[in-house]
Image (cartoon, rainbow, N blue to C red; front, side, top):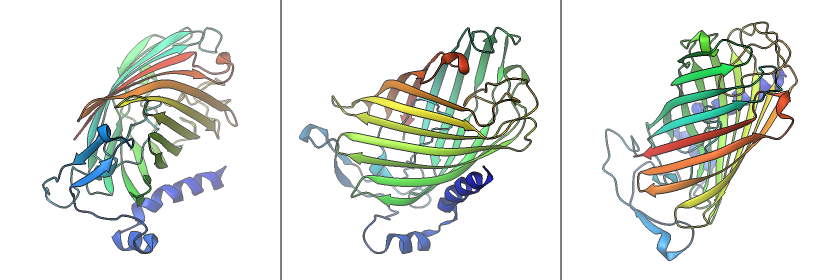
Length: 330
């Protein structure tokens, strides 16, 4: 699977390597919008008169796009499930407060229990195309039937994301980036085992009231005897059935590409961390999330989803999962 790692790494780094001149060459004229200055733009949201809104002209801070980012995509619904790795391509400044409750099936190797996670994510638009991301932190409480009960801090992950293909006229954006995760977390909750680099690529496309978002990641531990490599993919679909209310469906998948030797398990810690399991190479996990995103006001939106596995729950460590996500956007 090393060819797959290099492919994902190359795609993700493509966005970060492109400068303004390369982006303009890629656009080949006026087919795509590459304006870096905040402007007053009237946009049709959902195609009805009641949803027409004006994006106000914003003052330039330090340089074009700083903090404001790309205002065209500011009101697009954000993903909810698997928040550590389902990275959207949008370039704005926001903070997301996240709570996850995860039920472990009784018939799995962990013999039941639950995982609770509290975390906050911060994203800062550095330009209209470039964004700083801090996507993992927070606190976890873990209880299973075969491990000691524990609670402690999660690892901390930061990175950069660059939108290298933007087409405002067709509501399309594609971005790539890289995260770095430190091993600063608590061993009691299976954090702090090894560093990890995770390149990713993501995209979004809208058709009137229908929105689609997708992402692919490759998780690469710096010590493969302590953590497992995995490829993750994510898809999101939502539709605005009422003004500012978007029911959504999300699909997630994980494919593990190597065995580690830290834990004699044939299951893994999904997106929360890594057990370093010794019998997971070649295995897959699939799940579906059903929920909504509600834009409560101009600067705040609430998302919630119930997620369940699309295979035997006893073959993995997820019986069901509830994720709540409050996004506060500049």
